[in-house]
Length: 432
Ligand code: SF4
Image (cartoon, rainbow, N blue to C red):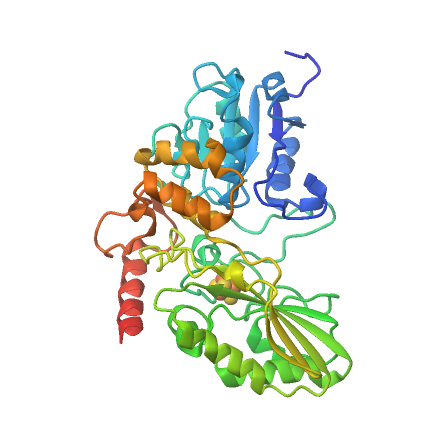
């Protein structure tokens, strides 16, 4: 071990999906891990950075899980390295972040899994890791045992990180698919939730606020989250077809060209072609004064843990990646098209496998991460191939709301009984 290395280091590893042109920590703006590093440094613990290879020069390695994809990225980065094997590992691994929802597939690569906001216990946790002791805390699992945990909640972090202060966390709107809003208790200004100020060059605002913008924006980001008014009313936002038209016409009312990047959720339970056709027709009926370009970025629905939709089924097909770049409407004052990069069924499957994993998933996970034929073939081929060797039903099926669920070990500030109540009501409405 190098005598100059700090005892604690943040692991820098290759992301499974490219998230930014600049994939460095600075480029990714990974605020969560920087908060933890700041907390540790303020308590006198020096924190450096390491690679999978140089991890052995440190006593404790911190792993930031920004999304479920990082479970795949971590396994592929270190899962076959002898120095990371649990029985030989000379360092302790602490992992946490928004992607830490089900650590089953990495339970032999991580020693302590921290759930939710962890800055208020991070110093004690790292001290326990330095002492190579278990850490008993309601928001921490001492792996490889999968035990009940409650996601940690906290106030806004009081110190600016890289010049940025945390303005809010969580969301009051509670779309039924949105893990973020059910996992993080809202903290921020009183009043309604606005993701970012409309004064920035590329603001991100909720669709209902489009009608209130008062000057031209070259580019604006917003979300529909459902192809039809029926789907949006049932699972998320109550945005009508009239609201869609009104928003586009408002954006285009200032003249020139404006681009609307509209995030959407596809493959919702009960979604059908009529739902898609409804949105396409709604776009076509908008008549903005200036030119509006709508880019529809559709992400397939996932039954995220800790949400009222965690018991819902997963539909890998139809694949929205096949619609990538297709034009929906093309007129001088309105061009609507599907995004160039809609997600395919393979990465969709990989993430739901990880989120609904149990110890029985180990062989499937090993194949997903390392089987040569599953590393490069087209997305749909990989799904076909893996489904001939493994039963995918536990990851894709609809769960009865009262039966055991793979992530029953997880709770948050919303009691599970309340989630079940909302889920039952939602299913009644969807079926009705
Ligand atoms: S999806 Fe809904 S609940 Fe989640 S952040 Fe957006 S508005 Fe809030």
